[in-house]
Image (cartoon, rainbow, N blue to C red):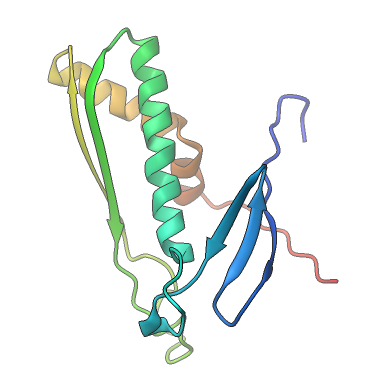
Length: 146
């Protein structure tokens, strides 16, 4: 880790078959599954948090880049969706991918600039968004078991 790196972490524990309780900084985070997947439907599931994290990250970076480009963002809506075949997750098939087949991002933006500058803004935001980077590039994941 370099001196410029910022470390992010969540610490938590299983509090049921499908429920996880984590703490991020001073925030409690609960993860659950919908009833159709065996949960109590008491909180978003991990996949929904991933999509929310992506949308939230794009929001921050689009606004950051817009400010740098002297673009005033009057309206910004970010909708993120994707389809998963649950067969691998449920152990029914090992030939299916466990994750998203693709992720769709719909950005509705109104600014004080033209569409070419809006396209440049979005491209720069995509290039600088950490979640986008993690989703499109392989990232080493190191597991420890204790």
